[in-house]
Amino acid sequence: MDISHNSGLKLLFQEPHLYIQLLVEQKKQLVTTLPPGAGSNSLAWVKLFKKPGGVGGGGGLGKSYQPGSMLSLALTKGLLNEPGQNSCFLNSAVQVLWQLDIFRRSLRQLPGHFCLGDACIFCALKSIFSQFQESRERALPSDSLRHALAETFKDEQRFQLGHMDDAAECFENILERIHLHIVSDTATEACTSKSCITHQKFAMTLYEQFVCRSCGASSDPLPFTELVHYVSTTALCQQVGHVLGKNDRLRSDMFGELLQAANTIGDLRNCPSNCGQSIKIRRVLLNCPEIVTIGFVWDAEQSDLTEDVVRSLGPHLNLSGLFNRVTDENAKRSELRLVGMICFSSKHYSAFAYHTKSSKWVFFDDATVKEVSV
Ligand SMILES: [Zn+2]
Ligand SMILES: [Zn+2]
Ligand SMILES: [Zn+2]
Image 1: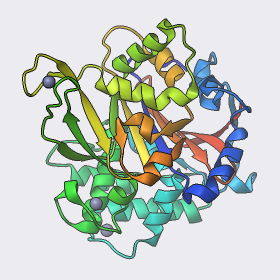
Image 2: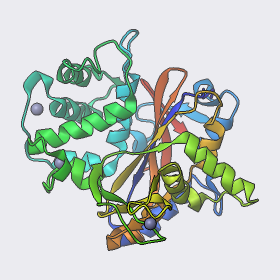
Image 3: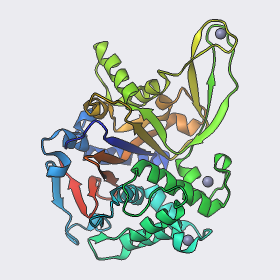
Image 4: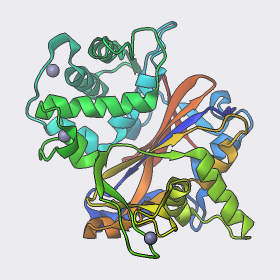
């Protein structure tokens, strides 16, 4: 796969649904894609990136899914993208959402919503989901959602028909809209609705603060909520270089720490009491999100960082590694596993998702669905 320097990756981590009971099961499942004792470099999709021909050329990918040939993948369908539609960004976001067990089930269980009729993103998404479930077609149109999205963001001139857009922003906006359809409240920052999938499952409740180690002075804590945790790839690769420079091995369990270090590296301030020290920002996680989304910001103009970014990826993520401090007891113990990925390469979006029932990674490229085999 030719991933150019402006390629984008978006990762989703999901907490085992019933934390303690399912943990063993989760790890057992992972063995099927990860040889025992293997590091992150053995992940199926990492190999895929490195193979000549890669994703687009079909190297490393299994046969396209034939309807009815595999019962476990029967609910896995492609999404159409006719010439000129440029819907790959939307299709990738939808596929990842559909494959997220927690999201799919929660959406199904919701009793009602504030409906916007023709421009209702909620209805359009639900209709695609029910077609995923019921249709016998191999690939389905995503037009209804495309229209609802275009209608909703008409005034901002975003996600308009025929125009290519950003999959990460589309994913985040779909989640924000779902919140509005359920809660009908613009105060997204303090959403406490128990039925709001967006904030109950995806949101990270944080505060950030500068604390001086030298004199103890601290800035006022700044609380905020995020649905996607953005990390600069330039900073991440500096951290990878830092670890390798110390002649250390890059271990797959370092992923959270690498992300945290990358996120704090440039954020130095002067001590609030002016003691002369420059101090780092501290980010504290207050809740235990079930799904964590990491968005990579490709901010390097010149060099190709793809190789280093892919190298840094780990199949697991500890929240206590990702943040300076975690206050929730469940969050302290939780180990999240990688379940989805949206990729951007050669001006085109595609997605990888972990299919729980078959314990396999599946690759989605619009109408094409392929099982990932190593
Ligand atoms: Zn509706
Ligand atoms: Zn909400
Ligand atoms: Zn100080």
